[in-house]
Length: 359
Image 1 (tube, rainbow, N blue to C red):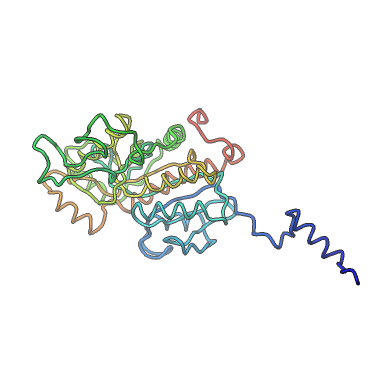
Image 2 (cartoon, rainbow, N blue to C red):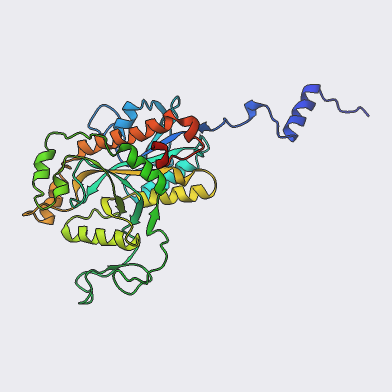
C-alpha cells in the first residue's frame, strides 16, 4: 500500500495552523488604535455643510473623513486615522447613548484601551450658575429617572414632591441605599485638569445672546458672557423646564452626591454613556478613568421673570437661543483638551493627566 504524500508547503501550513501561527492573510485585521473619542448625541441634517448639530463641527474641523459603517447603532462612525480621533453620534436619550457606547466598545475594528473619551454636547443650564454659551465640566453624573413617583395631586400633604429614591420612604430620605446607577462619578483629577486647562478660554459671545441674558434680572451669573466652569450634570429622559423643576434638580443632585455636587446642566444621555463605559472598563476594553463630560448651555432650565414655564418651554421648542454659541463653545473647549492630550501622547498614552501636570 502506498504511503500518503504531503508537500513541504502543506506540512508547513499545517504546522503553522496548529501552532497558532497561520499566515497573516488568514487573520482578522489588527484593530485600529484610537487615541480620542468624541461622543456627540445628535446632528440636525447632513453631517457637513448645513446647519450644525453637535457632530458637524468635529467632523469638518478634525477632518474625520474615514467612514466606518455602524449598522448596529444610530449613526456611522467617522475617524481621522492619522490623528487617532474618532467621533460617534449616539442618538438622543439614555437608551440610544447606552447602546451606541456599548456597541462601539465591543467593536473588534477598534482598540479603545488607551482612548480618552469626551462627551461634548449641549444642555439646559441653570441660570443660578451660568449663562447660555457657557461650558461646564461635570464630575458627578446624576440620573433623574431611577426613582419612585407619585402624582403631585396624590402626594401626602407634608411632602414637597412626589419624587423620591427607590427603597426609601419619603422625598430626600437620608436613609437611602448606595447608588446603583442613580449617581456616577468621573475621575475627579482628570475633570479638574480639564477645567484648569480651559478655565481662562474666551468663549464666543454671539449676536443675540446678550438680549436673552438681559431677561434674567434676578440671576447675575445668567447675565454674564459665556464662560468655563465646573458643574454637574443631571441626566433625565424627560425634557423638563421651570423654576419648580429646577429647584428639584438642584436638590436631587445635592441629595445623591451628598452635598459634593452642584447641578448646572440638564441633558439626557450621560449616565447611560458612562455606565456602558464602566462595564467596558470591567473587561479591559476601555479605561473609565479617561472619560470627560463637557456640556454647554444652549438654553436656560427655567424662564426669566414674567414668563411662565409653559410659555418658555414652547418658545424653546422653536429653537434654542444659545444653540450656535453652545456648539462653538463645546468645540473650542473640547479641542483644547484634545490638542493637549494628543500633543503629549508619549506621556498621556500611559499616564492620565492630573492638575499637577499644569504647574
